[in-house]
Image (cartoon, rainbow, N blue to C red; front, top):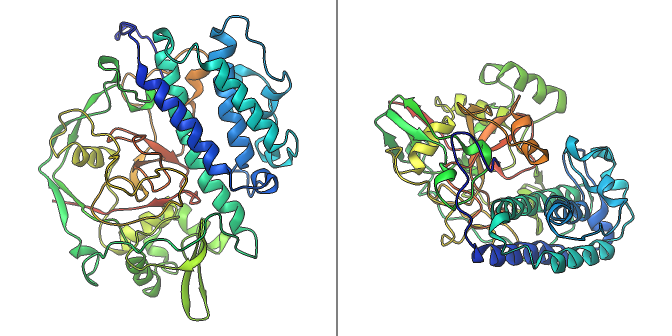
Length: 436
């Protein structure tokens, strides 16, 4: 995130005592989520897009050691001089690193050694955590670790899914989703209408102490045409109707690249779905479970979301339309944060579960039809932290909202998540939009 720019002077350095609390809570949550994993569970890497749980623990620790302790803690020495090569992710400015697909080959260091390293970093961070000169960088580090908490959950789910035994990370069954209000079709979901006009998009984080990533700004004006966006997410029941009506076998519904991807990979349903003994099931953090028809559909790609919207005679919203609805349909006012009181976001070391309803946040990340591109006047920060978002602005699509695996308070209306159009191991879903 840019700490200075010619147009936005540095904010006056003031103590941020809440950062210490957020730091401790975030670090503790990641530790708690991995307590139920064996060293073998935490080492396995199921695909190149995913990373081992152990690597997430170590990489987030590397972030604090590299960008805070190494540079700003007087006399600090690296815990192990060989480990930055193992746990740097993609920061070219920080030098060479192991190939991403090789992370699962790291049987050493052990899970317990990494936990010892995390405890050492926590002790070393104590003098820095309330330093007002480092507040912006500490806020970035907290948000970074929160992102990796969600990645840890989705990556371990994908890893456990590879096991024919279908092992569970948590016991029990997910709670039932809220009813969508009968068996009505997608057109009966109810709509949030917007009259169109000029909307202010983006987060003006230079004028407040509230954190935002650099890709959420600068704030700028966008002209919207009148539109409506569905109040509810598309559900498993509606997706079953799409499948039954030939959704995966009708080429005219699909983008050309999407149709080729679906044919090449034999895609006939969302990831983690199966039919067994006449029962509709899906794989969860609690193992194989019966699929709740009223729960929002998740683990779909952009290609699938776009095909469904075409089948429904509608479209995906743009990221600007989504944000305008989230801001109160007028594009004004500060962006509301990820609601910490609605009860369907990650809160403690519990299994993520979708609940449904009309909340914009907390069930799944929602695809938009917007390409992930820089906003007008965007400029990445100098140095390694400038590699955080800007260099990925190519070939991906923006998702809005937050998922059931997102840490509470992490997201907001201006937040821009992004994935490639074929990826679907995250909690990704959709809500529909239409022109007025």
